[in-house]
Image 1 (cartoon, rainbow, N blue to C red):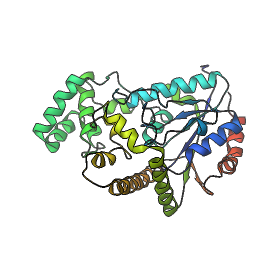
Image 2: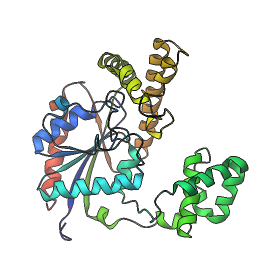
Image 3: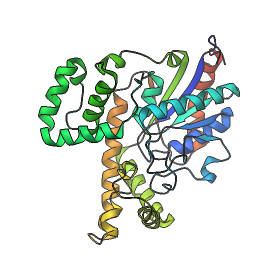
Length: 319
């Protein structure tokens, strides 16, 4: 990538079920662009229905990157995603195409756009197991207090209720010998070249809830239960990949612990709760364009609404 050329990146995000897939495809056709997924579950093979992975029909012949490319039992970190995303962005850019990043995984998007810098400390399973055992023995408060002594600045913004993050924080310190917060101050130089247009699509809450219910109904028809059964024949249900809505709620039904209606209702409830947390996340983001995702299904109309903003920005961006 030339050091003198800026890199345009369009981002389409928003809560689950808002209609991002359709809007992004319509915009990509208008711009002759390619799509880079920013979804932390659609990366997995065999997890198609429960993740609402875009079908070939929904992809409409548009190249899609970072979907369906690793197995559910493979380790895949945020740092892995950033490297894969940058590879896709650079390859798309080299073809004189525009990358459109699409998804609800806010942290994935933020890590690329803001240039998160990752220390050379890939996960160490043996070390992590030792730290997990230590965490269990010491308890959250004691473990957190030790992290506060190691890195007072970093510990202030750590989520005390997220054991996985606490353990990873300690792991980075052990692997590098440096306070993890020092890496947070560093920025990936590739992000300096980005010219980002970030569109966040929203929908009335009741309409969004109705859409989630309709999507779960459709997932049932598509064979969600069979998909989960097939996955459990090959993988343990404790996998990180399965710790997501649309899968966890099906396990009790398959184990005979509840009715399918109860499982289905929980998928809707948990997905709606998750969509609310996503909205709160995006409300904190700066420099984004807020758009209404109505009327639902009128993807070309919605893409047309943001097309002019994109074109005017691209005219001032060297590609």
